[in-house]
Image (cartoon, rainbow, N blue to C red; front, side):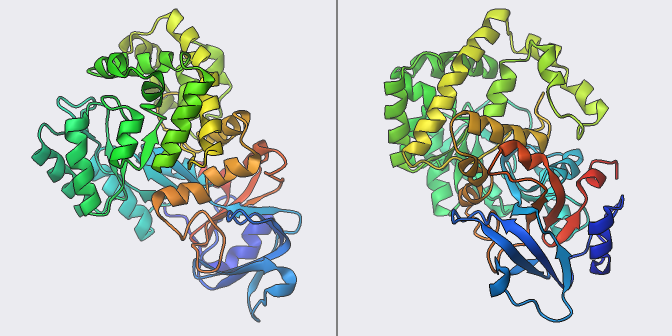
Length: 452
């Protein structure tokens, strides 16, 4: 059931946190007294007023500077923190995931490939207000070589096929093109040429092309840091050859992260940052892949937003068999993790754009909760708490080319979270969500996690 209600219940909902209570976006509401982290990189504003009108931010600033019009509904958020709504820059959205994303404060997602008709319906249902969920920036179906790694992908064999596939994504108003592991340079060049002509960025999960080549040709983002270690090692041939099949290529690339020294990683980070490519590290995916053999890892996860049937469908033992994994592989994957963290640190230090993404809802990567975990991993990789928050707000919005989300400023969409604790003091405080506001509608997180 679509759960938005009109704004006359704002104060009652907020004060009492009634089950099923979500406040409407019509009219004007002032959130008064919070400390505001606006996502622009400027210092926080204490004792602030955030004025929301018809789903947009009308004003934000110190209480003394923001005039609250007579008749405005006022919500006292003294002692709270307000931050922009989170953006998960790498998901594969399904209908069941939408409310869990929103419950964890994820108000926008960058969908990186799925069944094309299904994801179009999801995007349009949320945009029309018939479903509660985060705003979807879709890729449509992934574009892959032949035969495609995933049955839902579009296989291309020739330059003409590649150009046609790009044109199809533009016709569905895709926010970006997503290429997959079997696209080689011969096919990548026409994809990028057509995408440039149609002003649509290309995101890449690379396999048959190294990261530096792809970046210099014009790929906008490297998903999962794919192709990076291939560039850092200097001899891309073995990893490229292994990507004739998905799991052998992925597993070899994951194991190979342990091989480059810090100097090689630094050179690669600087070259990629200079080329202007962004990375979406999905450290939470790399972490999970190294712990598929560890039952205790699953018990450490927040799975409250994952239905029991979905958990059973993950079938991790079957995945281990399909991927051809052995005990030595897991040890190698875990040995690679410090170098993955080091690369993220070096890349950001070199001026590269890092956007936070989770790859949910793949096995052991629950929607919403995994973005929170990703931010904790980014901080563990030596980003500051502010840098991690920016990776899931301002910088993810920059990757999307969207200037009305990820920040709190006049004219921006009213997407924000009300927190009871300071996320800059400890990134784990991001879980202390009292309310989620998406396009001006306010939701109770606990209610969103209940079955609709």
